[in-house]
Amino acid sequence: MHRSCHPPRGTPAGPFSTGRQGDGRPQGAAASRRLHTLSSMRGGHRIGPHPSINLAVLPKRHKLSRRRVLDFADLAYEPLLLLHRTFGSRQWFEAAASVAHVRPRVRLESSAPHTLIALTEKGYGIAVVPSTVVPPSSVCAVPLIQRKRSIGDWLTVAWDAQRSLAAYAEQFVDDLVAYCRRDYPGRALIRRAPPPPRPRNSGV
Image (cartoon, rainbow, N blue to C red):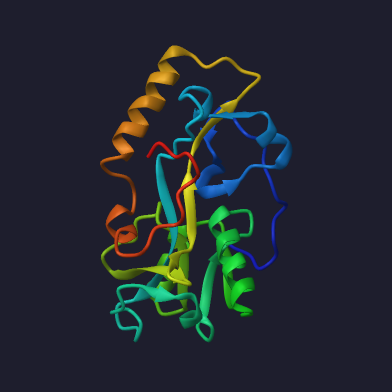
């Protein structure tokens, strides 16, 4: 499903979720005030499971597909396929556009990353998706950077402070953090570019 208009922002947070909803969609201010991050379990250290950055997904025949990384300015005159504005990764993109004083050529918006990737494969434009989405081998995915930094953020684990956290959930968090120190979605691509700044007091 895709459309050119923008859907309403924000959806309620669940009792246990990442610090950004779904594919990196930000929680509202009211919800964030009710969230405990892992700092409440880790002596003041904010622990992020792993970073997530924006990727440019291009057809293999595209002139930019051989780059190891792409500067945001390289997209200035390219037709773009973007996720809706409710996605956190889209907010990262918009912030980069504002910094670069660029008005992107948005050809299409969708709520489905793989729809954008399929259209990219057919030559309709360059898709911008987060590194949590693993593109198929039929296209090229390249990290986006700006001012020598990846365009993205660190994902964190959070839960509703008004709900108790069961022992099995706490164990799940411990296991998740330990696993993400070794591997996580998009790790190989993320390592090709400078990572986004780590959160202060990060235990990662």
